[in-house]
Length: 484
Image (cartoon, rainbow, N blue to C red; front, side, top):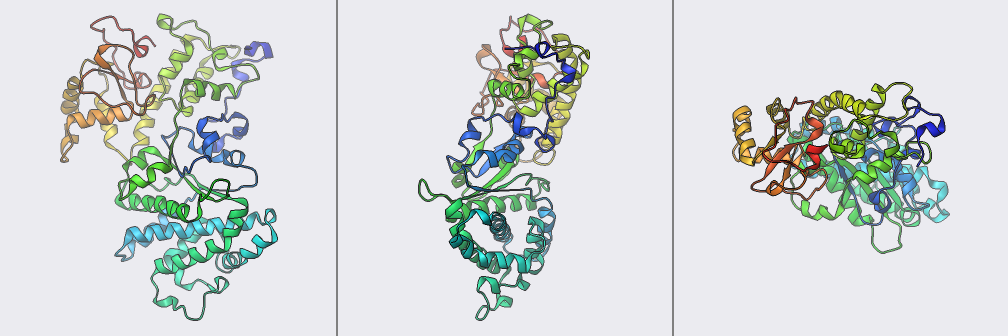
């Protein structure tokens, strides 16, 4: 491998890119094809899930480069839809859940038609003739073919739609039909019109930032469940049928904490549609290396000087993240900022200095990440301030939470143990089973469960932000977390 100095570069002259995909203009060059990026279309993945900063939006933006040749790809961020759907909720509606499914299915079908129309030159004459009714319907009813305009029409004036292009006129008394019934007819006619094009080219319809209007309320949950059900319903009918055939794929990119908070009948049938994004040290290092000059790798950015106990720089950095791209870039970016302008490597002292503001950001980021889906986390984090970095047992941490965050115990079924499990599920704490081996976190091992007993460790990324006090181990520890 090479060093920055071999290229006449310093740390100040490298560009690690933006920490968010939306503003990273060089994402095409930085993107790393992880296993899920290469296999996303091999299986019927429709719910793309990951924690905040896990790379969902980057994967979303890269779909046009990942899908097979000739597939039509339509990317959409349905900003504003939630506010409009709430107006429908305000109306007297005895079947709210079914209405939200119908609304989203209506929007998804029209977006699919719009995508086909936009890529008409790719299609055969037969497919173009078939989708004419859908095209004429869009022109007659939607000057602005955006999701918000579509859902606004569903909510406010669906019964005034001009349906003649779809062959609906005499014999269909639209005034006597429910909104959902009208939407269902439109969806069926539109999808039938574009089906030949889908079979010929294939269509991937992907939605990102669908949580922009999420506030954790029952209404938000019902709207989100409606979206997931609508996506599955269209996928069941117009999606994969036989190997080798092109088909419709509706992908919803969603934060995993929001998805996990949704409870609805037959959610088990959605399990096979889930793709959970997960990174490890190797793929994160590759992600950083992709942003550096040729032959300069992640490890070449850092000097081994200044780390306690012989800890490797990569180990030190990764132990202070939840293994998400955004966090690695944040910490490295701050280390580059504090390093001298002529430096070519990051020393341990500079990394430790960068860790101070970074850790404070992580505490605030965690609070913000779960502020709507689980606001109790902010109180739990505050209860850990000025506390030890390690608890010798689950019971010790339960006692502290019951003392400092007792107000969280009011709802039925909430116990000190369940609150500790919450911290464990969010990787705020990790475990060391039988007081041996390294500390383990769910961010590294998603299938990990909290045992009945064992020592607990506050995640390294939060130590400085929570002013955690490192206490002496009752016996010499040989853990990655404490060594790092």
